[in-house]
Length: 217
Image (cartoon, helix red, strand yellow):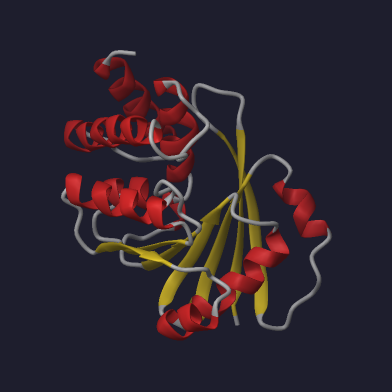
C-alpha cells in the first residue's frame, strides 16, 4: 500500500472520531508502521501483517479512546505490547503524559525504540506486571486514567488497574464486540462506579470496538 493511501485512511478515519490528523502526525504513523513491521520479523508484536489492517485495527482502534480525553491527563497503559493504545494517542495528543507497561522485556525494548525514533516526550515504557506488589507501590494512585486494550477479561482488568488510578480517576477498557456481555457478569463493587459502554465501528471495516468506562470512588 502506498504512503499516500495510508495517510488517507488515517486522516479520513481520524475525522470520524473528531480528530484532525495532519501530515506531521501521519508521517509519524508511517514511521511507526515501518518499525513495527521490521521488528515483527524478529519478535512477535502483532499477528496482523497487512499495512491497511495495521492502520485500521491497531492505529485507528487505539484512537477510539481520544474522545474520552482532554489532553491534560496522566495515563497508564497496561499490557501495552507494541504500544497500543498509548503511542497512537500520544502522537495525536502530545500533551498527554503516558506510561506504557508490559511484562515482556522485548516488547518494552521495542516501545522504547519507537519513543526515541518518533521523538516523543513525556512518555515512558516500563517492564512490569500490573498485579505485582512492587509495581503497584511504584505507581499507586498516580494516574488520571488507566487503560488496556484486550488485556484481560473485564473483572480481572478492573482488579489490576484500580490501584493505579487516582481517587476519581477513570478506568477505560478497550474490548471487541462482546464487551457489553462482560458487564452483565460483573460483580458489584464499592470501589468503582460504572459509567458507560460505548461501541464504535472502526472506519473502513466492519470491526466493532467497545469502550467500557469506570470511575474509582
